[in-house]
Image (tube, rainbow, N blue to C red):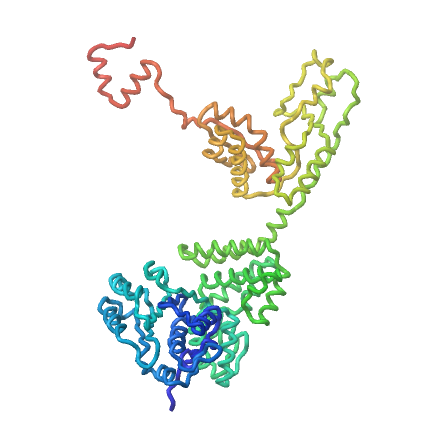
Length: 598
């Protein structure tokens, strides 16, 4: 029975042309060899399993090839190539710095450098995982790397370039290896499967390539594992079962339920996923990736970022048409927040379920937020504006005069607000740009218009009744959350900062509103000065809150916090009482000497 050789070794590239996904590096190296422009030291850096050590060995073999091909590749049949392939070349030395990282190891290597090559032009030294060398070993190696013999070439490989001394980096030609693309890996796995007469499904190979995260060696290891598991038939189902990967269908199904706002089925499907042994963090991370793929599927320009097979890509394109960009961005944000707080939570399942329920209700929130502003209808029984003529107003007319507003003007204001939604201009600011005239309700206790006495009734004119009411009128009573109210409060405070009202800004920052009843809020301030400042700004604040939140029942009152008011001693008696409270012995002293206050 022949010994089994893993695919990563059996199909390890032996020429530059067979290296997968690093054409920018292999082309540069071939040109350098053909033009005889080889550097004294090379540094290959990049993630694990992308071909650094493989390229180093191919470069070492090709440099000394006696019959270099026109395309810059080694012939593979000359004495130098044969000795290298058989592992008995005296001109190529390989050192693993992970286990040989001391000063003595480097000194031994430096001693070998002094010996010239045999029968070839160059002596090549490959140092793998060079970042593992100690500080003293780096320093010992520095001089040799800077001024090596003309026949010595050093090829260093590392996964952590940032750990290498800058003095070493400055003496090397640096080549950064890329993560290998999913499509390139899948194609390479397919070619190996054909050579080994293994049946496969393209979707299954794509899953392996995605799971490998850019490392071809990892992909080949998983490929061998699944071939053994499935008996030589690499299918989509065998891959996800063996690698413990959540099926794409789960993510497509749960997204359909989220778009249908089906809370119950969403939670039941998540329970099924947990029952299969998958971790909640693994699920929420995969769901974020699914939303990302849907987002890039919505535009032809970003479709190339979708690294899946053609069959899965068709599903993404179909579901992306049913999803809005707003939904996908908001859902990704919720999933990201859940992922961040998952490990710190004591009830991790609840964290994911809460995130799913939030996503389920996103469309309802969007519909509520985009409800068009309706023009305020004229109240039944409103009075028409009288012609400009002096007349006597009777007492009964004054008592029965309801609120009068110019309805057409209000409708124009709200139409302007609706048209400027795209510009993200706050509704309250739009309304403030257009003047309004309201005749307030004379029966209202909060009106700022004085009701004339009977003796002055004959002198009241319409111009006097048309004094401007600072409050915007409306019938909207939409629901809002405490977070939305605090967001509006912060936005109004930002306006205060822009307008340079520092005293008001202090009040808004340090005194958040407290709800004392539905839609009724109270703000506590420290003194009368702050109370008066707040009262002056109250109309603008209420107009902003009511129009932004579309609820004209909102009320905000201000009150001086008696606990916050510190009464300082002023008179001699008050000062004495203040000191006596701290030191009762002062009272005995006063009585003993019969002291009094001036």
